[in-house]
Image (tube, rainbow, N blue to C red; front, side):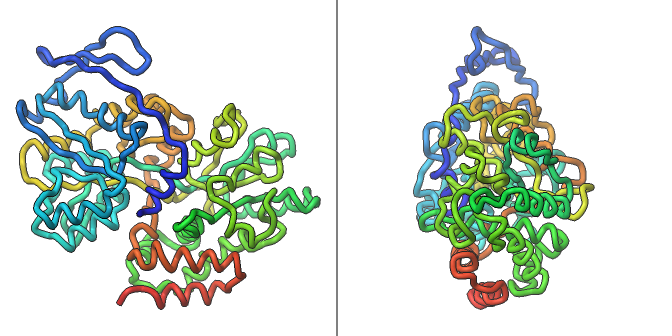
Length: 463
């Protein structure tokens, strides 16, 4: 199972809302918006490009199986179905990663599959090259027009474009309490040096032995250690260049390269400093045994000031306290993890990709729809409880339900933004979901040295 699925299983996810669509008439379909009343006309003009697909069915297979997450996806297909006449047959399975290769090998592949991370997509392409279909021209044109070029890069295998971006999430965030900052006279840092100065200031101002600048947790059952990999990936984007990040992920430079050592040590400047962690929870070693789901909660009781975690963590706050307000002026909020300068803050991202297994006009049409502004906006509207966004630059942020989703969208679609996908999800599973997790856990639990950790991970890389 990917990190994405493990995280999703642990976090409280948004509830879906049901959209009811009536049949298309002359260029329009009727729509009842979530929470609305009456029927609104939906313009079918944008769907004319897909042609008349009456009687056609496109099967979609995903790992998104819970009703609360699946229903918004199902609802987002409604305009396409009503305006083209096609039917989308959605199937979500918690056994997706195990069953998809079985189905492909048996000749029973879905028309379109959603991949929770690009590493599995690349593996399927490599293992079953004759079963996969490259992205259609219309969908590719949409991606070129509406997405940061990094999203196309992660769906490309050996120079051929196979996987379109679906959902996205931003990871380079630091959660904090605006009230605690205001009461203490602290300002949100804009550079890495300002962040470290603030960290030192908080430590100096709080000498009770319990309250610390940072709190963190790496425990996640069989996936224990994955939050540490996000820390290292974020540091790689801050101590090195985007090109070096790509080389590291692709093993064009070794895992124990000096740049990687520097990145891990930069994470260690916070995570292995007893004066800086683990607020409300203990010392450095407790990071290894603190569940990632709970690691930010000391912010709510005032014993921790900052917690580095992705945008999806917004759902966890309500798990701790039902009435927690997640907003710029709320109980908790987040700022972008600073870089060396304030000019450009690189963003670590995660997301899903979709690949086709049948070469047919209706499948290509659905791919094109999924890369269009129409779909991104329909999906956002169909997710009224938030927790989802697209990297499509024509998504209207007003359609995103949660403030943190809007902030995430702003950061990952900013002009000139440096966006890189979760590195461990791109690495061979023996590393990305194996030695990288284990060694980084030992790094905090056993105080294993950075050099020994990096050497061990490098030695584990498949030949």
